[in-house]
Length: 79
Image 1 (cartoon, rainbow, N blue to C red):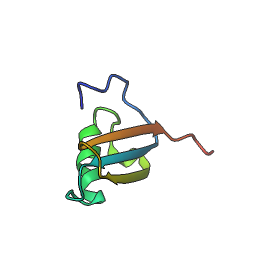
Image 2: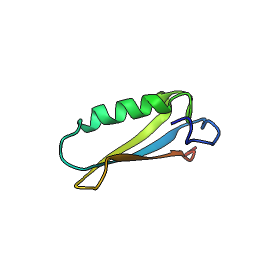
Image 3: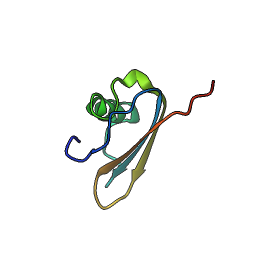
Image 4: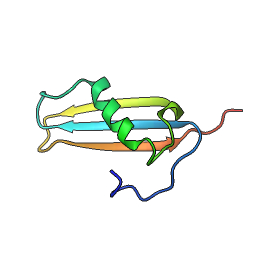
């Protein structure tokens, strides 16, 4: 993770979209998938996972390889 992310740590509220791609249907459930990935990003992409105000986890099966895509964006202030 640290070798791929080159941006600054995001402050404030964020939204995270996690796309999980798998070869078959043998994988962890969405909750367990997201926990490890979100923990790995904490301190690197954002300071604390309490900043996450919106989380989407999408599972795609039947691909040629297993991999993940993560999109993290700062949530616009609604004030």
